[in-house]
Image (tube, rainbow, N blue to C red; front, top):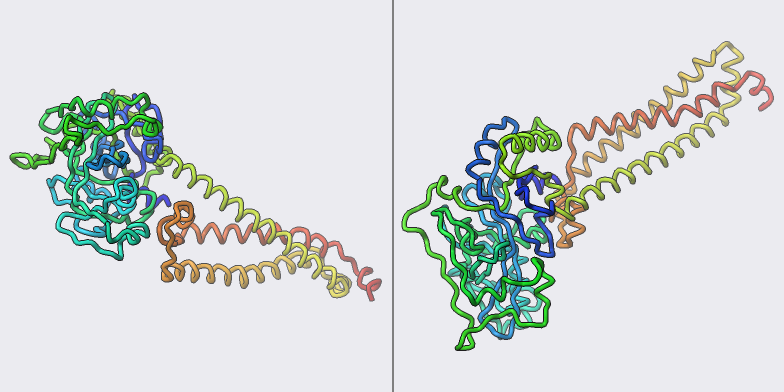
Length: 463
C-alpha cells in the first residue's frame, strides 16, 4: 500500500498552508477546500537545500463542479489536480496509462479524465466523455451506458467551475485529451482528474503564472456563494444552474494556449495548494517529516508538512488498521503454534518416560536430557519451519502471476492495489527466522522441564 501511494500518487509527505485546518487533504468527500499557497518561490529553495529530500512537486488540488448545458441535469463534482504534467511524470513515473486517447504534452492545455470520473459524469449529465478525435468504444461503456446505447450522447470537452475560498472561480471548458487509468488504486484515485496547472488556476480564479487573476462572472456567484464550503450545499432545494435571459447557460471560457511557451520559473510564480515531497531511502518518513517541518518553520514559509497517512485521510487510517489487524492475526497464529507444539512435545516426553528414565539410570544427566529435547525441537523447526518458509516464498512469487484483480475499494486496500501483489523483502525473511526461533525456544521450555524431571524410578514404575 505504501509503495503504491508514496511512489505512485502523493509522496512521503505533503506540504500545506499553515491556515489549512484539516490534514485530510486528499479524499475529503465533504469537499472541504484546500487553502492556497502563494509563496512557492520561497518554499522551493528550502526544499532544494535539504539533503534528505529526494524530489518534490507543487500542485493544485480542489473541487471542481461539472456543469452541463442541459437544464434538466444537476451539477456534479470532480476533484481536480493541476500540475506541470512533465514534472508530474518525473515525480510519479508510470503511475497512469492512457485508457483512451493520450496523455498531456508539455505545455499543453487540457484535462485527463479518469475512468471513474467519466462514469460519474455520465450519471449526472447522461453524456459519455470521449477524448478529442476519439471514437466510441462499446467495450468500455458501463452497464447503464450500454443499455442506453441507442440514445447515448458523447462529448469531448468538460465544463468545470472551480470552487475556492474567496469565491473567485470561473467556469472553463476543458478539452479532453485522454481517459486515464491509474496503475494502482484506480477506483480510489479515479476520483481525480489531471489538468495543466495554468488551466487549473484559471478555473479556480487563482493568480496565473503571468500574475493575472481571472475575474468571476456575476452569474457564477449563486453557485459559489453557497452557505457551506462542502457538498452538503449541493443538495438544497434551490436550483444551482444559473440561466441568462435566453434560458440557456452562458457559454464558458474556452482554454487557449499562451502567446509563447511558459518557462518553469514562470509557471512556479502562480498559486498552488500543496507540494508533494519524497524522501530519500536512507531516511525514515517520521524523521524526514520532523526535519522538514523544522526547516520550513525556520525559513518562516507559512506552511507545514504532514505525513502521507494523514493527508490520505481514511485511506491512511485504513492502512494502519489493516497493518494492526494483520499483526494481531499473525500473533494469534504464533500463540496457537506455541500451544500445539507445547502439547505435542509434552505428550512425547510423557510417552518416552521409560526411555528417558533408563537413560537417567545409566548415567545421563538432566542437562543432557534437556539438550536432547532442545535439539529434537530445533531439528523439527529447521525442517518444517524451513519448509514452510520456502513454501511461503514460492506462494508469494506465484500469486502475482495469477493476476488476481478487484474493483472493490476496501479489497484494493487489502491487496495493496488493483492487483493482488504480495511483497517479500529480506527483512521479512530475517524477521520470520527470528520469530521461528522464539517460537521454538518458548514452545520447548515446558516439555524440556517435564523431561528433565523424569527419574530412573519413573521408568521402573511405568514398566
